[in-house]
Image 1 (cartoon, rainbow, N blue to C red):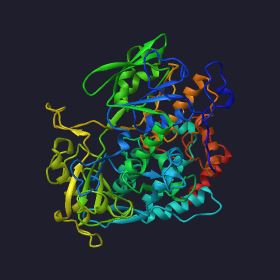
Image 2: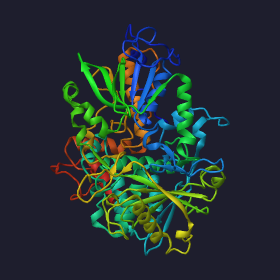
Image 3: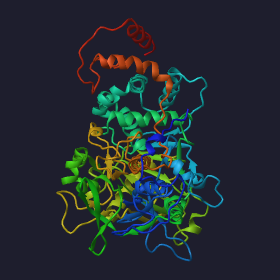
Image 4: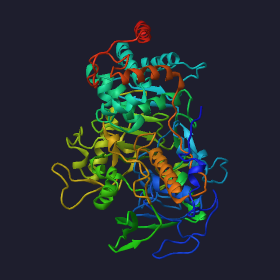
Length: 623
């Protein structure tokens, strides 16, 4: 049931005199410099940005015989990296590990696992991929209410059909405390509507509707809104149900549901690394890329792209001291986040490719992490924990249980045995202690407020270990949170240097493809249109693969194209999708989308065929 595509045919690659070496051939690498010629002529690539997309693009290009230099302003790995907490390592131990936010590798990720498999690690037959370990459950903690644990694997079902999928999913949802049977049935009906919508409806209707509106969150009780709609969305895709499009959340939900059943996956449904991200993944990756010939120029921020005669002639980069220089290359891969890409792609570049002119309309938000180091192992749950009633929308993972044994022997001063890594997803809501939003607080206040919200959720439940202040050996806030001398906005004293793209309803229209109308400029970042359709590591990796395929085509390379995995599409829904395509073309609603459903655009009534009436009656008997 595996689906993949290269994005290019062999015929597309054979395009003439600019052909590069065959797949896997490694040219002699040299740093990019103005006026360079010789054996690398026509094959020099400047990758602008060293995050997930930049590293993935460099990996694919260096394996196909191109000369690659990566320019990165800050740190390789981008938001996915881990980082040492300064001054915490003693007695030969490593510093305590900090991170922008905890990592999560759903089973439906296919592109990143392929990259990981190709990064060698001593003792690992499948390289970095063998550093992934599976979580068993997820938990939802409440203030003043019962907690809930749910498994992240479901019983395998033979002879798959749409009915079997829904029956299994219904049993799963009915286990969620506080949600009434009729609410589960309504939610499932909406899930079926999405699963069985044709692509035209998904992109023509559900892309313009928020997930919150599609599932009618306002119609039902607090548990339906906060657990089934909001917390599940936040845990699954780190997005807000009231602003993210139903297309994005629905597609991710479908992928995760099938991953729970072990269908269309590359492994366990919920996976984490067995060590801090740099140790387990980024450092081995960079080591491998260097060994293959990739050059990394650090502390280099791209500040401009010069367009001449319809092509990018050079890039402008600035070092930490403020000195700007020019970088020549034959090909440019822009792999910086959208908020940094938008200012670079204006003016003449937008005139050359108008699709790039609306990037500043895309929305970014704050989601970043704080780590609490505890003097005892505290595996609260074997997986993700959502603090449902937290005004800051906190989620966490107890890391030590997944990492290699001996946390206290490897990190810090020997007294910390646990890293409780917490994501803060809502920075604009008032806290329970300070009465202030997170972005109007100083670091120590943020740590104290987040700790108080966690304790409020966990200490009421006798089945949980109680958290006390005496447990704390320290805390670390992501250094991307900065404090400029002049407050950036009323009611906000902090700034965030590493924000997260939010797939708001209708944003698909604004996002560009990985290959641009400028023949030697390609994009490799998570704002690019991808199958995964979400700002994730997987989205950045997929974007890089698509961008490299475009570059190979333009270069006339004879190298094999990069394999690109699309999200798994379960075939059992195809008959209803075909029916829905007919209805969409007649401007009719989905056969299961009842009149007056939230988010439904007006559609003129039209006669139904005998088949449609029969299907609707059969489903009505079931629902």
